[in-house]
Figure 1 (cartoon, rainbow, N blue to C red):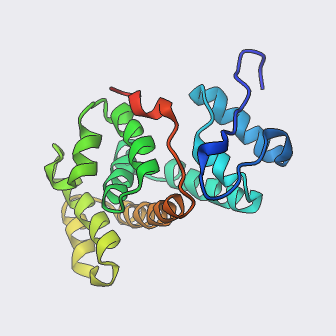
Figure 2: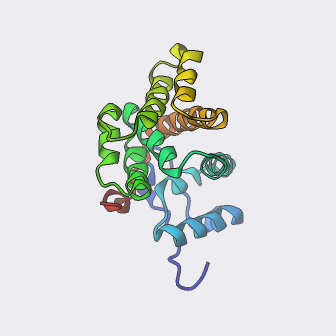
Figure 3: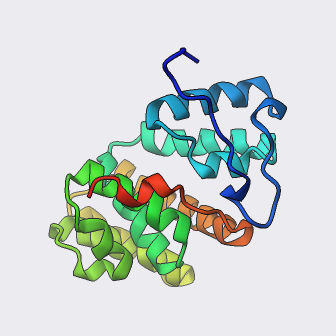
Length: 197
C-alpha cells in the first residue's frame, strides 16, 4: 500500500447479521487485496469487508468474480447489465446500488441502471442486449423453464457459444451473491449511490 493510498476501512455495518473483522485481523493475502481495491476505488467496498468474515469464502468468491469479469468476451458493460437486471429481480439492495454504479460508469449512461433495476424491459438497449437480459432474468425467475430455445435466442442475437456460457454464468453467480447479500444484510457504501450520475 502506497503512502498516498487510503488505509482500508472495514466498516462494522458493512453487514448487519454477521461480524466484520478488523483489518489487522485478516490474513495477509486478503489485506493485500483490500489494499488494492481501496487504492483503486478510494474506499473499501463493503462486500469485501463482509466476506472477510470467512477468509476461505472471500478467496473463492473473489476468484470467481475475477474470472467472470476478466475472462469473458462480453463487454464489461454487458456483464454489469446482467448483474443489475438479475439483482433487480432479486431485490438485492447491495448489488443494485454497487453494480448500478458500475453500469453507469461502463455504459456512460446515468439512466440505464435505474431502468434495469426497475424493469429490464424498459431499458434503452439493443435487441441483442435485450435478448441477453431476457435469458438472464428467466434463469433467475424460472431456472427450470430455461430451454435450448432460450440459448438459441442468444445465438440468433449474435452471441458466440462462449458468450452464451458467460451470460449464464454471470447470471447464476450473481443469483448466489444476491442471496448471500440479503441473508447477511450487506449494505452498500455511501459512495456507490452517487457514482456515475
